[in-house]
Image (cartoon, rainbow, N blue to C red):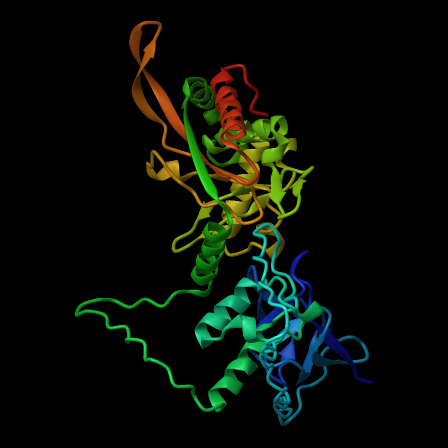
Length: 430
């Protein structure tokens, strides 16, 4: 005798509590196979395929494409045989899922009376991820996916009443508000001049990832007071150590030993020495993190991601190299999960691999700084009254001036430089 099981929305990351169904890969009446993709889901962090938890026949879809669903909510019904095998596919396909009943559009709160006290919204702290919208003139924080949806539909998020957890605004709220606004008579306003590309110009639509990156960077620059310092490091010892170990490392590990793990090791040593750099500014407090979860910038063909290596300070130079190779490979194969991109406490950037000499990198929200290693270049250097040629590299440090003043930033940067300059042939890679 056949039985049914209800498929629920999985939690796609430790800090991800909802997802938007972007596309169903099967339709009612189709056979689904356990562990094979059933639908595609977008979250605030990544897009992912969700596999079927069982084998059977999809009987009903309970959540439509474009709908935002909380983790644990039912999204589909699958029929399986008594022995756990798929039942036979019926002659006629099951009816298409009924459209979700229209919800009452969320309206803007009533304007305050003349005698009501005036309040001003408190700006959202950059260190805290997307959180509920608070009523009463409090803070308003929205997920990148919601911000992108609002930008596409021209919706002012401050006017939208949230229906998600704790009053959080969801993409569905934005869609319903936009639909209600479209149905209402338009208010008279001055027309904005249309965009007019010139002859021969190419118009390229932004990808979803590029829009999320743009929103994240705007949030960083508008909420974090950036400051910047640089120091020049003598990389002679690092270059000699790498040259002495790279052949054996390649043979044993199967990939190249680069300079990045050395700079990561220097960063980790400096973060242990200056723990306030490994922190989050939270408006009324400074959260100094016990674990050092190091984000590493990975450039892809048309974008950039920052996967996180957790508890990186417990790894050797070789261990850091393995971790970087792992996340970079999975990033290029589009196999990163939401958790791989969250929880970072500090970031290292390697733009020097493209030949840059000075970089003013933008800080990831929720972190106190980002260190960029630049190109290693042979330069003339004064040594004991003489001029010699040495491999030199600039270390560029962008930091949150609310967390660090110039003196603390300089001390951190000096620790990084001194660690690198202390490397020699005897420095252990493993």
